[in-house]
Image 1 (cartoon, rainbow, N blue to C red):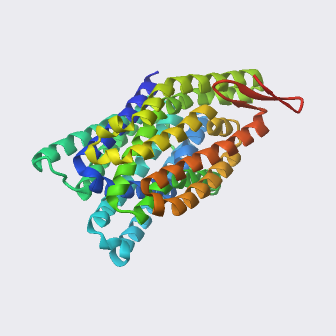
Image 2: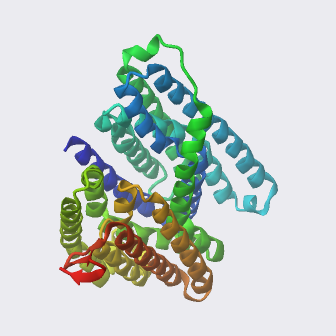
Image 3: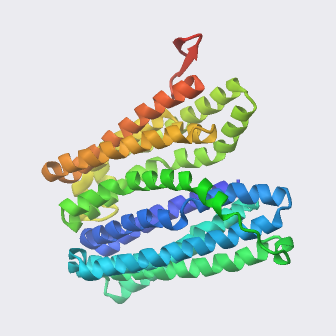
Length: 430
């Protein structure tokens, strides 16, 4: 429950920081910040290269079997790999901003510079979190990024806002604060990691199984890349077609959609090991029961907030500032998209926990193409509402495909009102 509480706190603080940044920066600067942050979320994927997920599994195995040389080796190798890639990407980003048209917008240029400079710190933080989770210390893995960093960003932004006589300090300054907070939380996390590593690894010589690790991490990297692009493509395409003010308004509406999914995300974390255990034990009835219950509970728990955001989006967006109320229609559309997510249950998690991650990759890849195509078609004529429609289209496509794959692999589909079950080549609704 401690880990669950930390995770819930982290999601809540992330939303509050978004709200605080939107109010302090204003829609224009917040749009610039959001574009840079979307780029950062994509750039970090090749930096960690799937090692953040691989480490959890491998370290759990090595610690259980007393493979201390391998454990020490994979920690050292993953960190050196990620730092080398981070430095290379930083060099490419700085050259691009220096010599291409992207560097003509001074605010965006410096915001991207500061955000990109955080890549090594983010990589070290994610790898350290993975190591601690693999060592069965998930609560400690979350504290620096869930508590320390949000507190630093919030306090620094409020003090700076006051120092600027309640005017926007600008997106580059906000990005600089993000870089500073990331550096401090990473240092705190590294000190924490040193105290929690097993004493046995200090005296052993590291063994490096580089080829196996890279080969195993590569499919994870591909899946993470597709997921990252799918999550940020609407912001990036919107930013390329419209001004930063429109992008900032749209970014605020996505915070509402994210808020709807809090119960869904938290429940997915808690049920993932149970789904994996039931599937590996061949207990199909328990698997259906777990997935059906979690779908029903999260749907009804999130439904009141979903209805509120769909029917009265102006009240929610008013908390971000008067400018953001223009995004009311977009928020209603995004709420409808989240309704589809809630109604179809944790399909992606079900595929991942039952060893069918390739099906999840296929669905996400196709959904990314659908979202990107709709963004290009709809944004020029419909603005932020077009981006919201494109996002909804991607969500619907993703869930239809996930429904198909789950039904094909697991012989049932969980829904809040009934389960679709295949029995002797016949489909039943229960």
